Length: 105
Image (cartoon, rainbow, N blue to C red; front, side, top):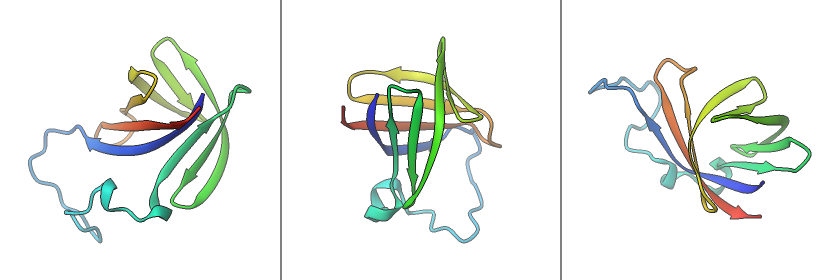
């Protein structure tokens, strides 16, 4: 439960060089402006408010063993502590690990 902010997004593929169309390859999450953050707000009613790049979406979440289900997407839970949430998605072309930092309870 609580509010979590995305602080790192890591592509876990082993490809040495990737082609980015329309993106600056030197831009990182830290370079994003305030309106380009991703915030997850988990509620005890199994609902989650997702603020992605200034747009808000409401969905449901569920935990099953080490799987976090956000809406229809499944993520493997890598780490969960009082201040860190790290999840991995295998649903995309390249597996991606997302690291969130708790902002409030």
